[in-house]
Length: 442
Image 1 (cartoon, rainbow, N blue to C red):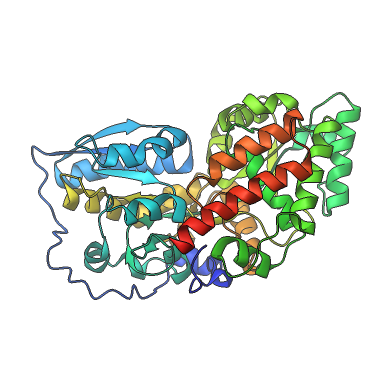
Image 2 (image 1 turned 135 degrees about the horizontal axis):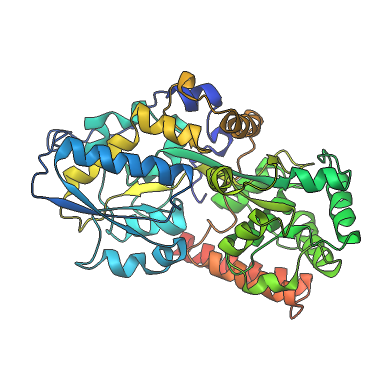
């Protein structure tokens, strides 16, 4: 994102690298002697936080990992499920206290894991990586979001987290509703808009959305990406060039969102909707289209039983939001670091990686022969198509620690009409630049 050394063009290797597990050097000389890879856990416990639903691929896999961890170590896991927003908004305070968990799932990127690493709140994992050989299981491009320098800038420095899955954003669609209205899967942006119009003409709001949390921000970014170049992404994420929020790409995105709200393709009610609201609206069949991440895939496999569904890459664009998955991080205040590292290693094992892959996730170190579920192969095929064309573009809120909230707030104003597209772009452009200046100029 902010680092000129970051090789954005190498983001995530193709399928063979993800499924077979490729080697890549960590660049660390840290000794692994201090890491006990067979920690005794009798009478001990670790506290674990995550924000995955029980029916998601990661939720299923990590539940199995907890059982295996307790069996292997004799320790118990105090599992405390949290919300994404709850962890994001309180991490700096909680991790700087005695209430810090021993291990938690945390969002990757400069504005999140990088920020906590620069504040001294996360454990340096170089020794654990060397001891367990995780760098041999992670493709070099997947290691990008795991490493941060002393300023919290992604792509170099030491390991402060470990991802065990990949992710990207695509279009979920209700196959039954598409068939009912004789709509083919769109292959161009014009066909996509025609599908939205057909649903609206039949009294259906086509897009399940949320402006209170991430989905609408990702759709806004995707619309810009449909016009953008890789250089544009690099400038935006890595600060390598001028970013003009009134350029053709951002202007197209803002104008299109406003147009879709005006035409009723997106409800104005989404200003108060969270990601969960949008996802469950799609599950209920209320809205036939949901643009969101692969993290929903396993959950939809389990929870959608009354209609057929599938997904496709956003038409008319070679790029989409995506990266490695979220990270396992170990707080500096963790009381049981060796046990925490052991748990991470179990999540990287072949059986747990296969569970991720066969339940709608994208494993980073699975054996390809272990992925047998046809629906999961469909998801991975879409991901491989995207990575093969160098299509992963990170996420819109990554550049600064405050941009997630600022972008959501601006989009809420765009949707409810208190800001026109031009004013919206001026506002978020100023906020973006202010955050970048703080980082780059100190």
